[in-house]
Structures are given as C-alpha cells and as structure tokens.
Image (cartoon, rainbow, N blue to C red; front, side, top):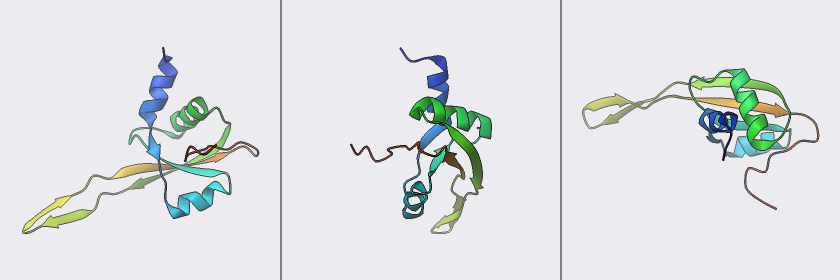
Length: 100
C-alpha cells in the first residue's frame, strides 16, 4: 500500500513536461514538470524526491496564464497551468522516457 506522502506526491506532480526544450534541459540536470496549481516549491521538491528517489537542489516555478480561444462568435478562455523546473544534484537523473 502506498504511503500518505506518496499519494500527496502523485497529486502534486501532474505529469512530466516533454518538449524539445525540456529534453535539452535534461542534459543540464534540469527537469520540467506540470504541477498542481496550488503547490509551492517545497511541496514540489518533496514530491520529486519521493517519486524519483533523487536529491533536488532547487525548484523554479512558472505560472502560465490561460489563452483566449474563439469558436465562431463565442470567445472563451483556456485554463492556465503551472510548471516547475527542478534542478537535481550532480550525478542524479530521472528516466522520464522509460528507457533502460
């Protein structure tokens, strides 16, 4: 059975952010994640350390605002999201793609 901390970690980290720029950052030992909007830097750091068994040095967060979208005459707005860039200790790494 999963511990309570593990469940909180799974709710904090929504998904890894896999783009070309994020893949290049992985070579610098920096990993990007989409995170829960209300999560703070300490929660994100603990979640990454709990889920991936690594040591995080720093966490930077970015709040991305929602964009306007139009469908015909109706104008709406997409929801925004929060990203986190986590820098790991030298020698640690995360296998986001599941390669062996």
